[in-house]
Image (tube, rainbow over all chains, first blue to last red):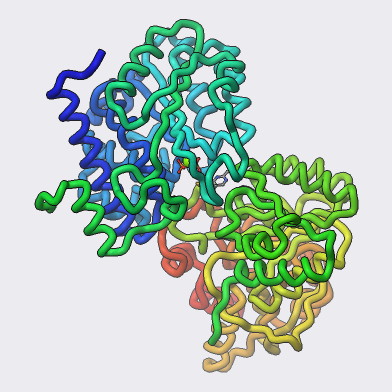
Length: 280
Length: 308
Ligand SMILES: Cc1ncc(C[n+]2csc(CCOP(=O)(O)OP(=O)(O)O)c2C)c(N)n1
Ligand SMILES: [Mg+2]
């Protein structure tokens, strides 16, 4: 079911603010990964601002939904969401990647509230999501577990170990998003080590698979609702995305995987994201 | 002083050994631009294998290549080339004693902003403990070049630990790297500083400062961590009042431990370790991290004075 106009505008605004925060953080740090943060922004926005049951004032609630950013280098998209959700003051975003900051280069569970798992070494987050989903079943808690994985990341064998286990254990409380932006560091995923066909692979491992446009809020939400209705299978939402989405010169450019914009580039990025509107 | 990152020297050296020996094959796991194996890939695309983000498979594949007489160099960041693939290195490379070179970059805290998730400060402890593995940590660009040539000439598993930031060039062509040998880079008789990798330059600076205060410090570059140069360590233990080790690694299991093992058996003396004190690192600029985690010339000077 499509969002009403108001909700859709609200979510798009959230995603837009997150994108602004992402480029600001990475520019301020002169370090970080804008491309894969921007490609996941719409997915993370729908999860955090429409779907997930989480509350910064009750951050350890055993019933809370869990989000695991398995592709931990996209930490700016997670930090942008957590700040907006009130897990820490917005000003702290500008300490990203600096010494003594809680906003580590890759999410650190022990240092920042709201981070459910330390990630950054690729391929490990989906297994942790499995563990949380299994515990939910054992404890008869009805929280849901969400994970975001990268299309380069799925080259890791451990992803497929996790995929097999999630299918075997019928983890229908687990929903993963594959941020299929087509690029990794050394080039297009198809050239480096082609993971396709991804949908058939996950289906063969016992997953329910949905393919969507990862920048269409309605499609993202429909897929989440479909996953919640799916019994006895984990759901893989293959989200076709654009790496660097929202900043024209970053879109589909492999070079913007782990490069920070300079002052001029930041200005242009913010102008594009705000449609030329005044920005603080 | 000229500064060059050892990873930059690595890329260039790979091209040299690639020309010399057609059996040299290079593998990378989606980090070729960072590890500089891209330099080799450009010149010898048919001998370069991008294995994708799949380090375990990369190590296993390198083992298979080595059984046919190829000389594979497998590269990624230090963390993913060791701790991620510890069992593959042990059982597929070292146990059958295969001629695989694992040459990693972005080791230690000086990887910087990516933070603790990517900062390997335990890799040497792990690599040292595996039978048949040779462990080398070049200190500068020239030594890196020589180590890569030596690696091709040597038949057996070898771990080569390289870094991200530019570091001072200390050696020239007159320097001769040899597996199993350390090098005295400065004579001294009061205290000996044994340093590894990026810590060699701070060690030399510390010796200069100590000299101003009338303290004579010997500086030894210990690039061959395994086999380690027992002779040079025993000599230092006997001829000075004690040893300071300096390493960009956990003080548990690294250079300091290796030196302490040698002296405790052959020439007991005080060994003070400068290194990461059994903690994870964090995001920050390389130089800031070296200060915060106690890896500077000041820390070396302080430990040297504690001995005297
Ligand atoms: C185990 C491991 N190997 C290598 C890396 C280095 N690395 C960081 S991001 C990245 C590419 C990721 O590509 P993808 O999963 O497609 O992410 P996205 O395009 O969404 O940014 C690599 C190789 C890592 N973080 N972890
Ligand atoms: Mg990708």
